[in-house]
Length: 350
Image (cartoon, rainbow, N blue to C red):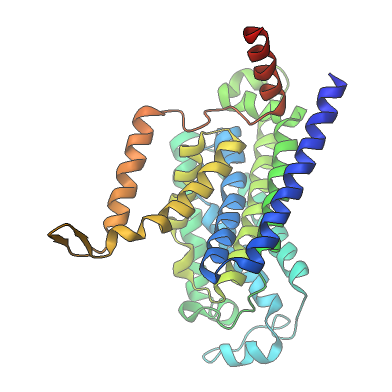
């Protein structure tokens, strides 16, 4: 057993080294478009894995990750903008003190966005987790919309509908995938710890979990806070990728996209969240060719705007019909499972 575990660790190190080599090769040889798609995939891996912790693992139907992404994005952007850039951007109302003079490195700004989102998640968790089920979904949906409304009207903080522009493009392949790997590692370790077992117990039967001594309220608060932290990190990365943000970027549509990812991957599966985030982000771009004019023999098909979303929706429906529990269900990728299958195959062959 110890040898198997050690082998598994070595294989993960090898996989990470190969992936780092792939990123280096893409950075040197890939087009700007390909690199941007890879970065976007990584950001949505952060969103999906963190959202899966509260929705999939803990079983709490939250609809508010867009709020935490907004907090992380605005916090990180405000901290990395220089005082001169802030003065140029805030043309209606000046930015409040001390934000107008603060300037921080990207890593500090990114972590500040995550911690502020986590703090907001912790504070809002007290009223949020007084409800359950559909009521919880409604409350968190309303909370997300409240944050968007505040961002639209807090002119002296967020610059209102004008948003923030000229944000430095710090988010590259290494920052994005580094954050994605850390998110996967931390969430996976949490899920496989005793806390993770308690979160799963809450998901399947909250009353039974309480009866065996699990403090369900504080475990849900912990899950919600961790999820909010990494959603804030994802928001900060997104802001420094597109270099301009406004309240319209953080509407319920963002939450809806992340929700599709974790449902398609399998609620409760970190592996499934990663796979679905990459497939949906990359697939949405790969299907753009269906919107372009095509010639099939003598038949000319004009380009139809929006057709890729129609086809994408059709593929999602097919997936949900034939894989109702998602791509992975509640299963996770495991080297031990692969070793067991290899041993079984060898025994059968002999």
